[in-house]
Structure formats: C-alpha cells, structure tokens
Amino acid sequence: MKNLNLFYHTEFLLTWQSEKVPDVKIGGSSIMKSSNIGGQAVMEGVMMRNADKYAVAVRKSDGEIVVKTEEYKGIVQNKKLRSLPIIRGVFSFIDSMVLGMSTLTYSASLFMDEEEEEEEKDEKKESVMMGLTIAFSVVMAVAVFMILPYFLSQLFQKFTDSTTLITLLEGAVRLVIFFGYILLISRMKDIQRVFMYHGAEHKCINCIEHGMELNVENVLKSSRLHKRCGTSFLFIVMIVSIIFFLFIRIESPIWRVVFRLLLIPVIAGVSFEFIRLAGKSENKLVVLLSKPGMMLQKLTTREPDASMAEVAIASVEAVYDWKAYLKENFGWQEQV
Image 1 (spheres, helix red, strand yellow):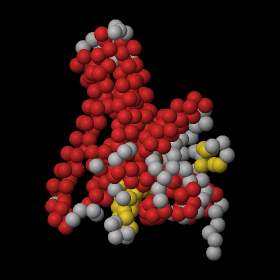
Image 2 (cartoon, helix red, strand yellow; image 1 turned 90 degrees about the horizontal axis):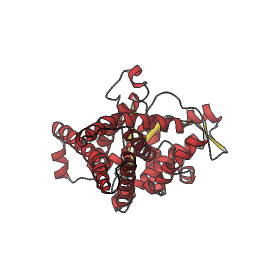
Image 3 (cartoon, helix red, strand yellow; image 1 turned 45 degrees about the vertical axis):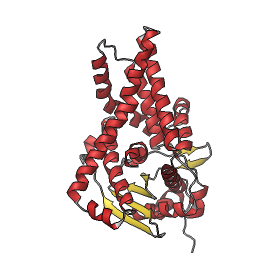
C-alpha cells in the first residue's frame, strides 16, 4: 500500500503555490475560481492543505471521523526560490513526497492493533523508515517508468537504426507501462477505496470553486475530475520526457541512461508549469493536450458515497474558511 503512494500523492502537488490562479471557465458555462487548496486521498480518508496548514480526516472502523491538523512549511522556505519557474515544481514534488508519505503513514496507523502501534511509537525509527520508503518508492518509479522503457526500446534496434524512431518507441513503451500500472492497481480493493476518497477530495474542491455551499449533497453532484490533478501531471511527465529524450544524441548507452536520470527534475519542473498553465488557459492546444490527463482521472477516481464526502468535508473545514471564500468570490449569503 505504501509503495503505491507515489502515484496518487502528487494529486495535491499543483495547488500548493500561494499565488492566486486566475479564474477559468469550466465546460464553457460555469466559472471556476481557484481556492488555492489541494489534497490527496489517504487510507480511509482525505488530506487537505491550505498554505502551510494541512489536515488529515480519517474515518475509523467504529465510524468516528478523526481529524488531525498540523503545519508543514516545506523543505525550502525561501519564497523567492519557491517562486522560480520549473525550480518551484521540483521543490513542490519533493514536498508532496514527504507530506504525502507522512499523512499516508498516519492514516494507516489508525488501523493498527495495539502491538503494532507500540512498535510504531519510536519516532526516530518511524522517521528512518519513512525516509527509506520514500527513497525506495522513487527508485522503483524511476526504474519502472524511466529506465525499463529505455532498455526495452533498444530491442527495436534489430529493425531500425533511427534514433528518433527508437526514442518515440521508448515513449510509447513508457505510456503502455504507465497505463498498465493504473489499470492493475485500479483492480485492487484497497486502492479502489482510495480512488473513491480521491474522487471525494476532487468533488469538495470543485464544489467550493464553483460557488456552491460545502455540504454532502453539493459535493456528491460536483465533478470528480479536476484540471490540476496529479494524474494529469504524471501523464504530462510522460509526454515531456519523450520530447526531452529526443535531443539526447549520445552513442554510449550508459551516458544515455545517466542523462535521462539527470533530466528527471527538469522534466518534472516543466510538467508542473504546463499543468499550472492548463489550469488558467482556454487556448485550444492547451485544452486539447489536457484532455488525455482528464480522461485518465476516470480511472484514478471513483464516485464516493455520502460517508466519504463527509470525511472530505471535515478535512476541508479544518484548514479552510470556505464560507468566507464563497462570500468574497461569489457573493454567497448563509441561509438562516
């Protein structure tokens, strides 16, 4: 379960920036106004973050909703550095890894028995294990989605000498592995519930960003797809990597691999900037390029039930004054 978090905790990566995102039209009619909050699904719950404050809401086995609220300022606190294009995307991705793993581990701990809980109380040990798990997740992701496709694409050298064609085939193999990975994990029962909470998290954000009162009824009728979702980010990473790797013209196979590894932070940063642009642009090309990522979200999100919506709402309300937001941006008036 923990190793799968690399996929879905990038979910809130793109909504961490403190600067406001301009309003955008959704579906050509209703207006969406960015709330600057983001989140991710955890085990039987949802984490939401607003600026330096985050909350994790989890529904325990007895039905109780437990809400934990804390601060997280990020690995780099220099605002100028965090505002630099491309570089900010790298920092945000690292932050998402750290906070994502931490909140996922916390949610899992609520379902441990007493003996396991005692073992987990050693903070030093927990910190080391978290670091090792993050490192392992990154290494596995790089190996499966970056290195493996390269070596598989080299098998096509028997049929063509074109470096460009082989690189394009490498990209195709990478996409096939990515889609296969999504389809594989989407069949797992635990992950299906995570995807339902993922949908609840999206629905909460869409609900308030479209000017609706945050309640279960409005949340459930909101869209479970969101333009700044981490699923879209990962798809764009795959596409951007193809473009970058086309320019690697080195004979040595070892150096080709090395350059691919060195370009990963740059690819992540560029992909981050594209998703930010997609969130505020109605350019036809940008909208077209965004559609595959939105379609993929139909696999990585599921329709939540009312109890899941309640958990997501509890997480939002712990860190965000949605009533003030609706009053300021939509002229909403609370019914007495």
